[in-house]
Length: 627
Image 1 (spheres, rainbow, N blue to C red):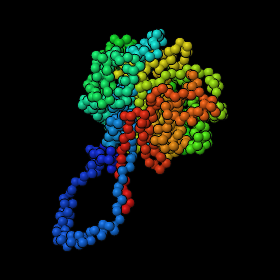
Image 2: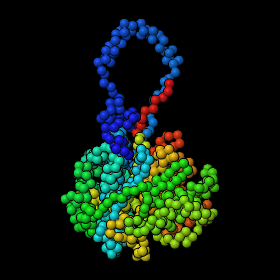
Image 3: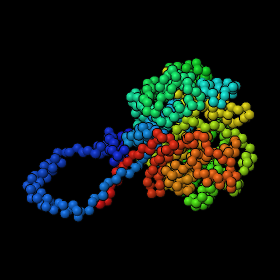
Image 4: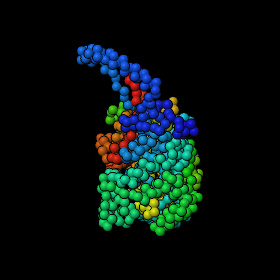
């Protein structure tokens, strides 16, 4: 976005912008409020008109009364003006989507709306994300026709080594798993480049929400119940800071239920501090020393320099994939972006059978699975490019020529691991992840995937700030058998991720699709399925999101199917194509939040129903209908 677009005094050409069916006021625009100021001249004209009506009103009124009934029957009805969506925000919680929409209605940018929504999401879905974690943000600037990424991924502390990290069981939660958070730094970088509204304004709605107390969401309540169910009834008492906020009984560890009021005053104070003083309130202030001391007392090894000097946001041009009449933009580097790119590059050249037939569906899913298997083989070679030379694998994964070669290797039946590569590793699901998708009336778009990794990250809540810290160190390869992995632990390194925010733009530089998802190692494959179904197969957005998903990794050469995936397709994939498959035990396979603009320019935003608290909030304009 240009400086002209960032000017808060600049009012967009279309001032008749509405939200939620109501007119949204704007300080500089009386037209947006729907009122007018009468001048003396207008009052004089009005007086003359009223005088004429007084002179002729009686006769005219009688005439109208006589013919009123007949005229009303014969007169054609004037078409009513309609509301047409021109912008949207989709997130994992309805209150947060509404906050983002209201920011758009104040003529905030897509980035403004995304940041305000994310701040809220960290409060209403704190098991998934928050300012103690990290994110990947993709920003499309319609004016400059450019897409860039902002990498706010957490980094390994400078004192962290594989030796420090050893002897930790797979599901052990402790402070040594806390990586240096990058969430707030990414927000600040995005706002500096693309924001219009004051930084402080983006925090205010959520701060007010916390101070008033808010109901616990169903998704967070389910996460609490899950943690208790896989451990023991008193599990939450091991984490007094967390239990203080989310336990109905801090002695027994009984978690609060959906709808119970949450009070989180320390986080409200922290957000107020960040709103007033900027991100240095966390990263470079007297409070920083307190934060580090707290983490060290819990057994962590973060150092003051990890906050003050070490953490830096990365930015760069997005990875591009050319589809028919459109371009896909996604994250580059050790993310899920190259996986999505390779899968779609493989699939885009096929001419698909009729998807209304069983044969067509089976053929699509078989080819999709094979593309997943090839991409998973290459995924294990991805690592932080600042530490390992992974440029060659990234160039290969986004290469159309390479995809063409792989496409020739897809046969009517699947194969064992050696057919694809010698890759043997995979990494687990990131249970705590959240997606925000935004499309502004100006044509700009933002897709952000944010995470604290597992549910509630490290489970450790800062006593001084109320921040829930991530456990992102778990995303490194710590298995001694993979000691040569490019994803091994090194100080200051970013771990590999599956997160893959995506934006698709048509040949006229207009946003066509904004999407991304949560679901751990299933993120990239789920996002690729959504894009393939909507843009390659032409499936309506809601049908594509609602349809059951599948996922494949080479670790055990096993196909995982979402509960409810059609049994007949599963049978044919097994019996005719040779896939070993089973239904996932997880209640939530993955969650995709999307906004689609169809070929006629109609906008549809859709929140994945798998996360019940999600919502799409629209911004509207009034469309005048012809008489």
